[in-house]
Image (tube, rainbow, N blue to C red; front, side, top):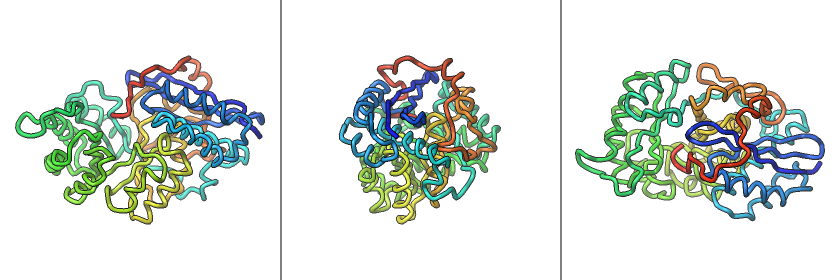
Length: 380
């Protein structure tokens, strides 16, 4: 079997951007499916996919590690890493389809047939007020989700924001979190994503302010590159911490595995190198007694691919779900994405378990990737 082409598939979603899927075509008629969304620039990711198309034509898609090593030579930053990750997912999908088994069988077999989700409401909320966030969170809980995440610190985008005193820029974000906690009650878990917009002292102050909100994690108060600061915050605050969504490869995660930097790691199959490296990161994290909560605020293909590998991981905690982006999301896949009572049901079909629905694809597909990805690297 040989790869004949690599095809980018851009699907328009909403004001926050698009989903970028990957089709890897073969001369055996098998088409692999992956996702390469949210690279920071869909146009650059598509350019990387076009480069990989030239590199991998004629390559045996079952030789996955050899393909990854070829693609890694591009060294084009986050966009090429995301494109590589999407192709890698599609190659595993091809192998699963050829063998007639779901990908989770290739990674040792599933430990669970459904995966607990948390609803990330951030990409849904347009009314960025405490009431707007609270309303969305209440809706998600009403649909059965037992855990919610929001990214409330819009005012911290500029590095020169006010950090202390009565006019501190973080105060509006704290009010949003408190409104959500009040709306969803005490039994629903609540996480806060800070998108690395604080310095270390500010991160400690805000954690203290949020202590009464009983968070089940406090995500990236400072950038993931500031490993020492993250470790210091983790050691001092009363709630668990999480990070790792932007890291690539085992070398990217190494600083988080050799000492206690955060309590939960968040590898993303769209950015970390794909399914095999996600399994490796999870195994290393288990040795360090860390939980895995995959970052996944993207489309249904990334969710399906993540589910296939993370279902085999003993230290899996919970999976991110981008709640409320579009009402046709589940139907974009065939068979449809199945979510009930806040759990994703693992597909038992071959490969990653789904194909793209051609009817919906015709309605929502873009001919070209936008030059600017409105989701940006942060926030998602």
